[in-house]
Image (tube, rainbow, N blue to C red; front, side, top):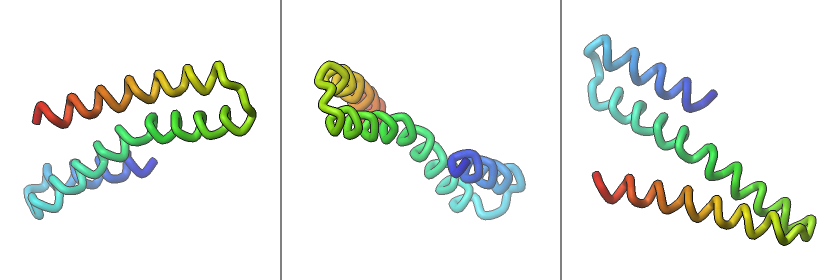
Length: 79
């Protein structure tokens, strides 16, 4: 919901032509929130699996987290 609100308000400002730097900042923040959502969900899952001592799912979740972080790192470095 927060990503949609940031993206929507940034898009509305950008289309209106007013406050262009503010619009870009809102759009960027919305994209970062959108990208952070699945990463945070995997981190929460990792903590919960570790608390339950389910080591198979801890290992699997660590692999998924590694793939997500690698993807984000490569995307940010290409900028």
